[in-house]
Each structure stands twice: as structure tokens, then as C-alpha cells.
Image (cartoon, rainbow, N blue to C red; front, side, top):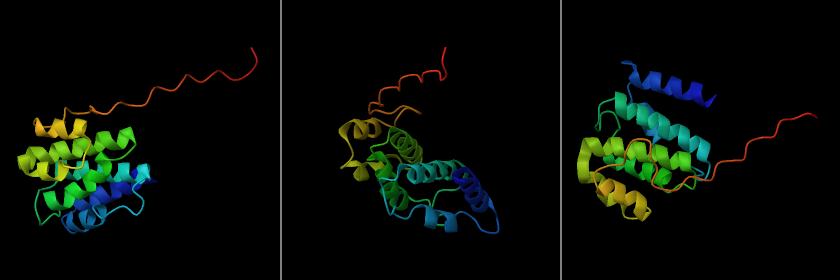
Amino acid sequence: VTVLSSEALAHMAKSPAMGPLPVTSTLLRPMKDPSAWRPLLARLLLLHSLLLSCDFGTATGLTTDRIMPFALTGLNSANDQVRKQAIRVVSELQKRVGPKVEPYLKDVKPQIRELFLKGGAPSGKSPVAAPAPRAAARPQGGG
């Protein structure tokens, strides 16, 4: 359901009849429960997609002042997948606006903040240690 919803919203944002502003207005609202990592991850994925495919500015709702408060929720998440996606969002934003993201990073973990102060996070890498891999599942049945 989340994938279909995200695809529908992305399609609406790219539609000339609607455009991205109604989508970003809803997308960038504060989360009711920031600890709910799946909805947060889905919204960050859609946000990253819109940053790559839509114009940046007030006409689209994609501005630093609107994106960064939402992205901070992801950067401060306990979930590694969410942090990685938030890093991708902020990195893409930083490509567009440069050091304008820096004032928003004052309350972010030092490891993450340093990435952006050095000019952006490498794509797909999280500066925060990922949880240890799970043990392989045992085969079921008697053998």
C-alpha cells in the first residue's frame, strides 16, 4: 500500500494539472508520531524523488525552510534506514543550496553534522553504525 500511495503522489506531483505544491504541503507536515519509522521512511523516499524530479522553490513547496525541519526528524531517527534516507535528502538539498542547510544541523549528532559541514554525505553511506546483522534463520523441519 505504501509503495502504491507513494507512486500515486509522485504521479500527482508531476502532473501539469496539479503540480507538486499540494503534495509537498502534505508531505512536509510534521509527523504525528516521529518514532513510527515506516511512514517516515516512505515520506523521505518520496521527498527525495521529488527533489530529483521537480523544480526547487516556493512554487513547488520545495524550499530549505520547509524541507529541513522534516529532514531533521529523519536525521535524528533511531532507525538506520530512516537516517540513511534523510542523509540522501539533505545531501541532495545541499547540492542545490550549499551551506544554507548548516544552521539546521546544530542539534544533529556530531557524526552526521560533520558529513554535511565537509560538503555532503557520500551517497548511500550512513555515518552512524548500523545494527549487527541478524543470525541466519534455521531451516524448518526435521532432518
